[in-house]
Image (tube, rainbow, N blue to C red; front, side):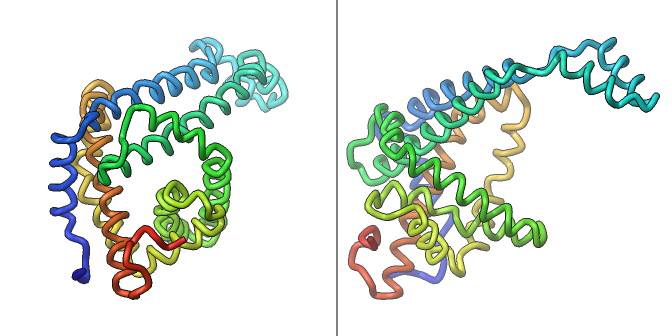
Length: 253
């Protein structure tokens, strides 16, 4: 029997219970995930960071203020990263996307008690092209909706939030089918998920400071991840039970 809403407090309570009882610990797997993606982020920053001194900035500003834009651009080119740096940064971002998919797989396996392990992080490579295409297509759709106004873009982002879970759950479905199914799942539930996001705003604020945020993220990454995975499960169960389409909320392929 499904209620008209998903109880946020119950989702969070269950997420905390799973965090404390599951093996391997979602916290420890989350640490590995954060460590690897954090190293990638630092590498990208170092690769693309411009080594400009205060004198260099002053020179550029002098050229700009004098109307010598061409000289300013030529001066800046001396400090621009090489093309190889952009290629490496692109590759690191791709791998980060794949690891994110692997972490989602781990979270789903954890809440379902079906073979969760550290190796799930690498299992994301089994969805390599599908994850990349999903990122590209959803990004394009959100961008196009954002051209109308900011709000339609935000609504579009919520519309596609479940696509990654569906893609992992149903490898037989195409990326566009996953996006369409996410739209169907989220119909009438976008505000509900938005409120769930807002309920984590306190943790988001604590995660902002560089040092404190690192330690807070060790807890919040698996905590919020498990909560959203449980939300996906509850959403599937409610939507498909209400429609009397399937006895198992995950068998909608």
